[in-house]
Amino acid sequence: MSNQTLPERRLIELDEVQVHFPMREGVVKAVNGVSYHVNRGEVLGIVGESGSGKSITARAIMRLLPRNAKEAGGAIRFSPTANEQIELSALGRNSRAIRKVRGNHIGMIFQEPMTALSPVHTIGTQITRTIQLHMQMDRAAARKRAAELLAKVHMPRPEQLLDAYPHQLSGGMRQRAMIALAISCNPALLIADEPTTALDVTTEAQILTLLKELQSELGMAIVFITHNFGVVADIADRVSVMYLGRIVETATVDDIFYAPKHPYTRALLRSIPRLGVDQGRRLPTIPGMVPDPFSVPRGCPFNPRCEHARPGLCDVDMPEAHHFANEQMSRCHFAEDFLKETVNA
Image 1 (cartoon, rainbow, N blue to C red):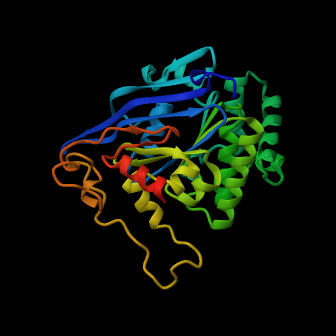
Image 2: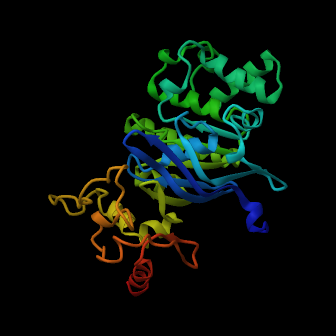
């Protein structure tokens, strides 16, 4: 990988992607110019509050947007091989071309496995149908591979569980079955949309360990969507922070945690509880609320909640993306000032 040129390393690239929802009250710009890329074999964490557009961006990649969504611009380019590029944003949601990509080259773990898995089909049926569709195996071979996949995700008695229905499994086992389904065709990219939501802490740790094992073994890239910085620190190589439909900062895990250059990232990090630190004190919180999507503030959308906001600048002009030598990006008027703080610290 080290001797590859940059374009060859990039598996998927989003360029100013926009997804809007026209409604009676106005237009909700759920994704408002998102740009990021994922290199082959790396894990990119996407972090942000609920409603920031993380899941809608993932669904735009998979061409699984709600029917009332309007794609208002941008491009999504996917390169399953170094010599092939597919513009996913140009494909229809039910086209034969996108169906060849879904499940085959790109797998997805949905946020709630109970609704993502069919309640009227067995686990084995759902996995074997995907394998037969993309890998041209007969039913017996596909069933054998499905059992191997359940064993790979550490499911007990995989042969028996092939005939189980989702409601017969615990939350953690349903999530493992969802992971087995997502990796059934050895995808180059796995999108994990908050895969540990509603799981207890022990099961969450097991799922994270499993994903790291699979990523290392299969060499696939992962887009890991979460609102938990602790999870990101454990699994990601790089992190993109989203706020109100935009990427406001992107950097390596170390740079995000030790040298953040956007006030929103810094505020999120300050609000993380730490064992044995400042016992008895209230955790710092981000003032205010996420703005109404029908009335996004002018200028920088974070300015009403930002302690560094300067009247006449932050509430007037949208900040440009500042790019630094370490490939860190921050969309803030004062990003250079935060760099000086880091250097002088």
